[in-house]
Image 1 (spheres, rainbow, N blue to C red):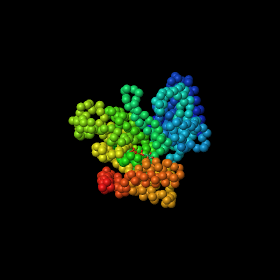
Image 2: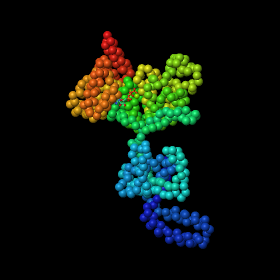
Image 3: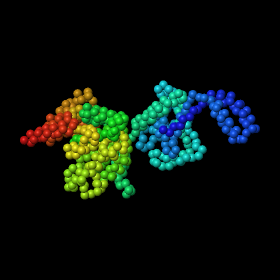
Image 4: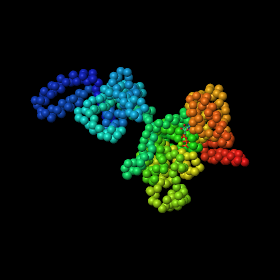
Length: 504
Ligand SMILES: Nc1ncnc2c1ncn2[C@@H]1O[C@H](COP(=O)(O)OP(=O)(O)OP(=O)(O)O)[C@@H](O)[C@H]1O
Ligand SMILES: [Mg+2]
């Protein structure tokens, strides 16, 4: 924490004290001039000044914008925090907005005083802005460029000396924490994808854009209980920093999202990112050729992020850890396949597992890893065990509850409309009786701005679909009720039975 601490006297007491002492000092100075050499004179005068310096009950912490050439986090946090405390009496402010910013950024433009209260204690901040006597070099933290600065900016935090410990141990951490929250609220979530680097040295790098996906938990049609348990799990995860440290685990969590296409797996990922304000790293496995690439990429991901591997079962041919892999290569002595090629020249399942929960995975904090698949059964069980994939989330076909949510987000129809609208009961019966994905229904609801027209279109669509897809209400219900793998298998058996009986 780059703060410097000094005592400053309040102006009134300083003047009073110095007025009475200055005559005495002048007298001493005249005597010394005649008797002793100049250095000795200076030394004696300094001692007298120090002795007579007025005692004050105030203390000041100086928080400079720069710590050497780099920025000072306390300064940035104070600036962010104090901009929420601006009063109408402030006359001059600076505002700016870069392309990627959500709202305008406010900064102080001239020396200002800002009052704050913390645990009943009054604190006074002063923003000070002055010309430097000589220019100085600094590093721009956004671009890493060296800049020349001719101004010096700092905050002074003044308070009663007796609160010094409280300010340093409690108030400053509070300001840092508050600034983090304020920044998180304004943060734009980024989507990082893989791109080929221009240089040969590192062939694959992350490229980033703003995540513009508007999906949130409010717009996701899924079982309300399941939705709540995901949100609770995320909340628990982010507040458990100490817990993870105490039990000696890397602060990370793995989610497996599985279910048919169009049931909202990717939308759920976006909703999680928007909820936590975590950046997404979309790891397209087909672009990763070697385990060493994987390690490099992991090292270049930031904390508080979500690493996503979509369609894990089909994006890459993962060699089996035990027997021969799908390309017919035999397992190596370590049981990881590829005995004929140097290990580092291939991308292996064991590389991926190491990546998910081996030592490599612990090189960051607050990491979430999400795998998605349409075929959970195809995945190696090693990939799915707790600790790797801690929570298995089944995204399934649309239920009547899910339909109500889509009707309210797409057509602005709420509970009362549901009871009164002639189509609703029919649609709910049809949905109960068939496999239809939220994506299919959402597509139909978007076809008209007129709710009646859109709902009529949906009824027709569902009726047509029902003719081609045989009714199997029991199986749909079973699949949607069961969230874990074993239960899902049972549901598929029920479904198989139903299809068999239909075929007969
Ligand atoms: N559960 C849902 N709630 C709300 N909208 C949904 C839901 N599922 C799908 N949709 C809508 O359908 C579109 C496609 O969904 P999404 O891409 O999330 O499905 P997916 O399960 O990832 O499919 P795939 O397995 O093909 O990748 C979304 O843009 C969204 O509009
Ligand atoms: Mg998807």
